[in-house]
Picture 1 (cartoon, rainbow, N blue to C red):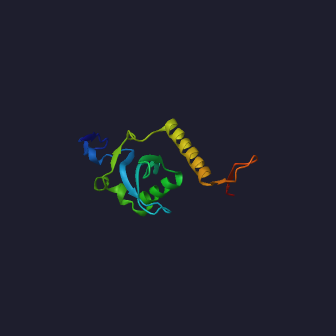
Picture 2 (picture 1 turned 60 degrees about the horizontal axis):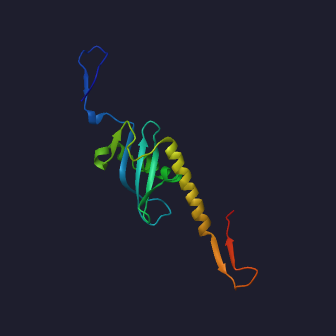
Picture 3 (picture 1 turned 90 degrees about the vertical axis):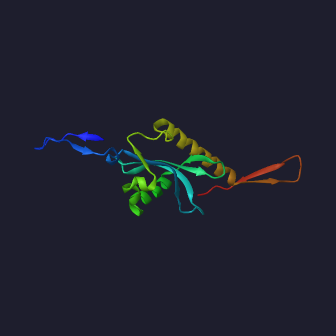
Length: 156
C-alpha cells in the first residue's frame, strides 16, 4: 500500500492500493500480432511508454531461426495503433491481458547504444539478404575468358 499525504483540510492520508499505481512502462514478453503483408500472426514482445504514449521497444520472433529480431518503426507503429486506437482496452485492464507495468524497462528489453547497434545490425542484415535475393548466378560453357557471371537486379 502506498500512502499519499493530503495537504487539504483533512488530516487523514489518502490510501491507494499499490496495484492501482501506474508504472511508466507497460510490457509483455509474449504477444500475438497480425502485421499487414504477412500470412500469419507473429509472436512479438513489446514495451509501451506511458510518458511518450508510444511503443518504445518491439521485437518479433523469426520463425525460421527462433530468434528475436528488432521490429521496424512501421511495425512498432502497427502495434502502437492496435494498443491505442484500435483496441485501447489492452492498456486500461492490464491484468486481464497479462500485461506488466513498472517504472523500469524489463530485463529483456535493451536501451540506448545497444538498441542503436542492434537496429544498425538488422539493417545491414536486411540489405545483405536483399542483395543475395536479387542475384542470379549463371554457369556459362567453360572457356578461357569467362566461367561465371553474376547479374544483380537493383530497384529504383
